[in-house]
Length: 94
Image (cartoon, rainbow, N blue to C red; front, side, top):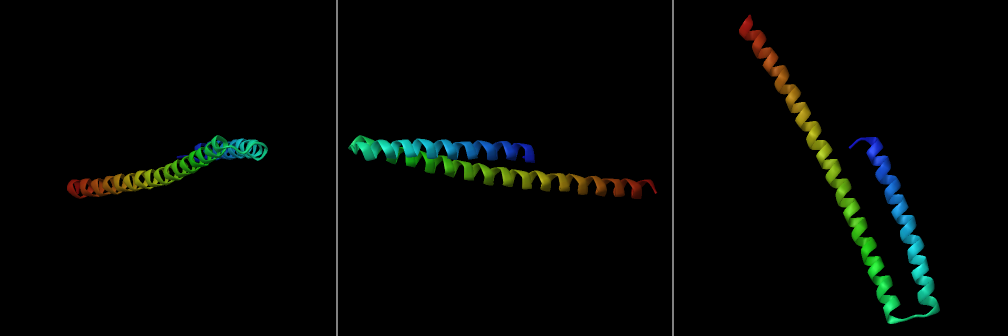
């Protein structure tokens, strides 16, 4: 993944965290004014969603990093094979 894609993802994650914090504060305010079981359940569900999203973001970062490493390794292997093939052709033609 190139740095432009990473920057876009960073901005998206930053926006998610700002939106989550805003919504979380609103829910907390509502709960403090009228504490009900449903408000507590809403807050807990919202927190669970945040944990899930954060875990998925982390998994995606790890996946992207591994994919990048695999692609780099493949390109290095292809280049080594090309060099070896060129050397073999030079030996055969000599």
